[in-house]
Length: 220
Figure 1 (cartoon, rainbow, N blue to C red):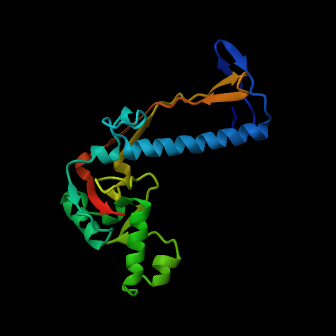
Figure 2 (figure 1 turned 90 degrees about the vertical axis):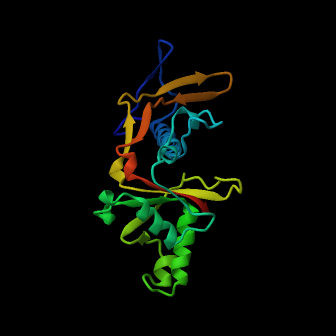
Figure 3 (figure 1 turned 60 degrees about the vertical axis):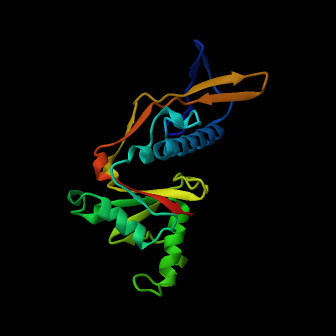
């Protein structure tokens, strides 16, 4: 296991200590890739978790999309456009709309692409075509930034090309993580492999579910 500053640490396996037989540079590479993989997994569980899922990993707990139930706007198979974002804001209770700039739209990559392309086609009423398409500026609607989330599903609905979007304050999203994150390393001699396991205990919730608006049925 890599330590801050480039050191190494032995991992305890079955009562014995095993030092991974590779140098610091390779150890650091493996651990950096492991951290990236954990980040992807946590984002997927955070967004797509569903205790009714056939995927055992996603079925551990409900994620943000499933938990958002109070304020839902059905976009009826249209692509991401101003109507989508307007109705999502309209569905949010007025007490949570006093500062729109503190809110965020969380959309799928293709939703971001569609809205960006549509704004470029408008002839520069709010953004020039170069700003909307040629540059990767963060788009916004009514001052609310539109953030592309890689793990936002794009295979929802019977047509398998529908997606969802969320609107809330980032501070309303709570991620709880057990502070004891450790690394287990095992040596599979017969397979000539090193097995690294990093158990992570985590939970997701909204502080106020009522302060979330969800758009569904968005064509991608």
